[in-house]
Image: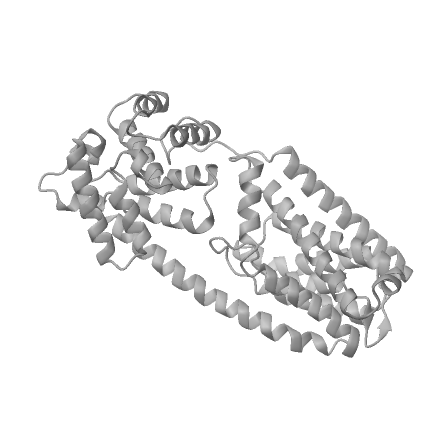
Length: 416
């Protein structure tokens, strides 16, 4: 049974701050009226279209609505239109973004695929941060006096983009759940910036600069590169999804043939990935780790007689290595990344001779095997692993596994 997850105080604070800011901005705009309604409408439509075109979450990608994010950022950084100064302020920027998100969320919510509260709160607070850094300086004339209109102004916008991205990263890490410490979550979010994030920031800044020179006609023209990038990302996501499904299907072959218990490969992969994050492995290594964990038992297909419950932990060391080498050979024949095959081959070696990914797979596989062999409870299984840290399991990996299990509850991986 899965225990209910309650939002942390940090998540509640972020949601509350975004809600208060949205209410204040809407009330202020309704009371004072919309300044330059043409610009507000144009950017509102742009953000709405971008939110309507949002995609599902991609592995390692943190921005599901790049066009909407770029449009919101451009409005926050807009100081001129067609050579004339604009007069909208921070609260109107927030109002336009909130109204666009609410309008675009209607069809998504009807399909059950709308943005979560945390994602919406992040967008509101990040855009408000960018507008707060830019709009007061523009309206007071200080940005023009300090930076002029040349390369220094572009550098100023670049610094604002970096600060806004860092602000969003901190908010994303704070709302990413409490199953891990804040440090590893922050590292994951920083790594995820290498996806479409730079394109979003660059497009937002270029939109603001383009509108400053030629007016609102720049918006549809400058949207095209980001739209093409979004289409490319969709295709890339489809290829990665197919690749992942192929590996998952291969991993299930041992279950279908009766060599391993149902769900064993998936449990080991999920828990191994969590341990890898706990140890600070970068994204590419986490992907290799997940695939190797899914396929770690594929060598058992070479056995004439299946091992009881698929638990290779009890086999002699030489037999474990033979199965691992056969599994690596099978993985190489499938065309999967050779790094995955190397981890599968090395999973049965003494931990001092293994890379970190193989150490994790070995420890997590043993943990799940021990839980399935009748060792009563996770505490007993962890005790068995700790007794083997002299030769079989790296102590740091076992302790990282213990921390992951403690935060998720000391239950068998993947069960509740």
